[in-house]
Structures are given as C-alpha cells and as structure tokens.
Image 1 (cartoon, rainbow, N blue to C red):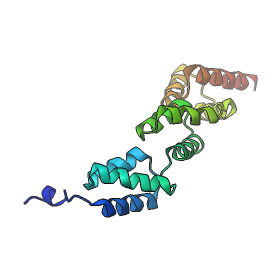
Image 2 (cartoon, rainbow, N blue to C red):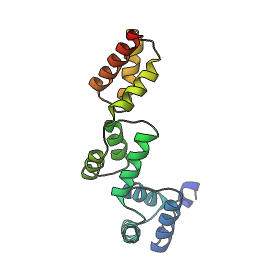
Image 3 (cartoon, rainbow, N blue to C red):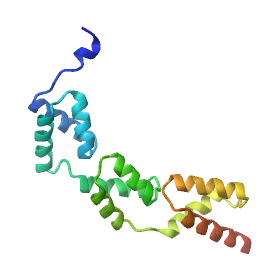
Length: 161
C-alpha cells in the first residue's frame, strides 16, 4: 500500500463538518474554496453539501460578505483596481452577480491612484519609466487611460516646479 492510498481516507459527515469548521477557524473561505478543500480531504459530495448548509445556516460561510471584505482588503492593503479585484474574486469562486454588486459599492478614487502613480514615477518622467509605471498599474487592475491621465497630471505639476 502506497502513501497516496493511505492519505485517501474518506470522511463521513461529522468529520467533514469538523474539517470545515477547522478551516474556517483560521480564515474566511468562499463556498467554492471550502468545497474544494473538503473534496481534497476525502469528503463525499453529499456530506460536503450538508456541511456547507450547516455553515451557511450559522453564518460561517457567506460569499457576499466574504467578497465585500476581500474587495476592501485588496483595495486598501494591496492598492488593487476594480479589474484586479474582480479577477481575484472570480478566482475564489465568487459569482459574477456578487462581484458586480461589490464593485458597484467600491468607489473609484482617482486621487489615490494619482498619489500612487506620482510616488511610483518619483519625478522621473522619461518615456521608459512612464511605460513601466503604466504596466505596473495595469497589472494591479487600473485602466490605461486613468493611469496616463494621472501620469500627465504628475508631469504637469513637476514641470510647474
């Protein structure tokens, strides 16, 4: 018997529920994340659904609330734009309806992007540096036109000095 055969123990409902609660103890999970982790642990589909029903009933799993918190963290801590936030939520299994609702609540703060672009450019307005800055913020989920507008504004302020 190989090691992989030993690790493929199937979990019953109680073990599945306990595993779900242990996972939720450490951090919040989306339903899909939790479902995937329970499946990898060896739980059966019907036991996973029952455990998820239990977690939903007691408010341990709530995709809408999870998405709101995740979007807030990504915006405030990682300084991501709406496109990148949507991509991250999609990767966590959040539905497009919930993602759209959360993004509608998230305001675009052009002043914040301007401050970030100005800091990233650091007074160096060579085209190579501007292009690098644009790529950096595109990766973080901002639109090209927004970034260019902020870079031009920063250049204009720098030229005035």
